[in-house]
Length: 437
Image (cartoon, rainbow, N blue to C red; front, side):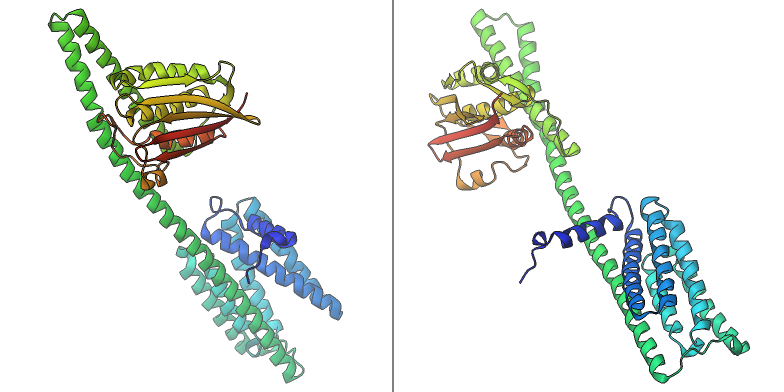
């Protein structure tokens, strides 16, 4: 049976506060977060012991744990919020060894639990001190243990034999063993948990970089091949116009083809650059203002009119001139241009493309419909997935396969919704839902 944390606000608030005190991955390295976690665990144990000894009436012992708790709070404050983790670790290591030495002489020397505490403290310190300092820490730990034992042999009168009965000794040893084992377990648990989390993040980042590199390679390949071809055509036509006497109908035809090539190349560049920018920045900036839908559709229709006329495709626009939406004008134009150009691109000769609008509560839904070749189930499944891949229309018009992905991302950035219905050999209808202005 799984526990649903959201049903327990206090647990949820405790976990949130704990994570805040431990620190984010972009603020502290793994050792720093482990250090904070162990401070918090130690503080919780200090609070527990403080309450227990107060209830038992052992006020002097309770005072010791109160001092410990204050020490942990100060240590966490300077490390977590003042970002003095390095110095806090050093202070903690020094004070811990001093306190253990004091505990050794006050708690029956070699006959007490302090030697066990030295080992536990060393393991705990190793989980958060810098790797290069581990050997120095081991040396200090060994020297301290050796030193206190030599002092006990030389000055046995320094040892306070505080145990009255064997039961007291065994009880104290068992309690220290349990406390040390719990702290060691928590230290290793926090270390392993954070390690596996960072390892997963590193793997995900590596996978993302591999995909990004692959897409980058495709991008450069397309720029090198697909943009060079139309530019060569433009250059050829311009040379032809400058060197050969051409009659007006032929000149008009060439100039129209030049315009079409330029428009297609411009759209391809727009898509490539927009996609590249989104990949690098991870987000886009939008400027929402009231935008007239008819004006955008008419502007886009003019840019693709030649392509539609070449295939004898009729573009029917049924949009009222009073329909306005909250959008970024540039983004909406890119969306409409991609969807309308795709409609023309994948529609056969003498086909039909229509643009309409409808209202639904406070939203406007723009419909772009064609009676073209439609999409297969597999194509529909991957329609909005980012992938640079050459695509060909019914007249072998070539694209880079980014139009739908960009349109989808741009519509989402505008706070809208984009979806479609499609059937093979029947056509496709795209719907853009945006807030009415």
